[in-house]
Length: 240
Image (cartoon, rainbow, N blue to C red; front, side, top):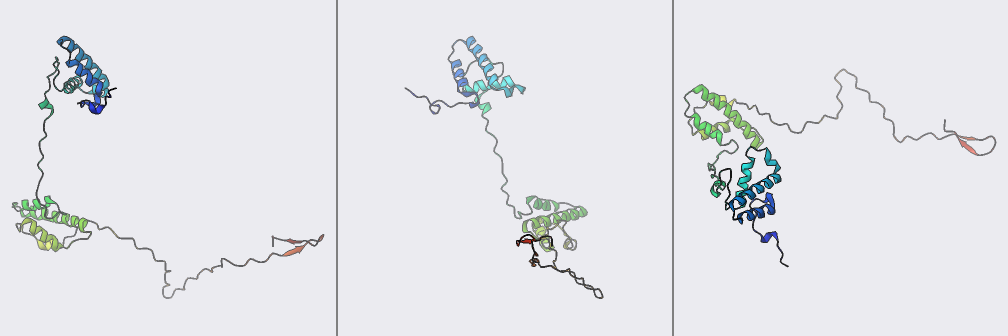
């Protein structure tokens, strides 16, 4: 008995339709009568539509089914389609290769756009606009430096980085930048725990009296023993 496994069969072009639909398409190509082949092709399209109910809501539902029919026949089926027959080149378009930037980022914690903005400011003639932009960028650089180093940098470091990124093409107001403070709030460390010591008495004030502490293991008084008048059996009185 010859065993027929799927790994020995031909590859399915559209596995979502299954092998039976692919065999029906293969049977279509073996029909010599063109009219009969067209009629059987429309029957196969109807079966394909029943297997793909999610595509019925699309505008070009029938168009997609005919394209799938030609794809499963490896573009060799010769039938009269109501739509333009697709070609292998139209469906196997090679995507355009994306161009990735190979620019080296010198200050990675600032980002490449900060350096670009400083180089662009060298061409600006408005001194007020340059000063306002440099002030905003310097605050941004302080915040990013804090995120990277977990501590606020000195303003001298910010001025040095600005001169290096702008290639000394910007006239800086170093006095204003030295007085710059970042709006970035530094995270507080562990909260200071409340002191357990008692507050000291002010001069001229009586010290606070401490409440007496009772011993936890204080001895309980012994229970009194009473004798029954009728017999000599001792009886313990728990009420006293």
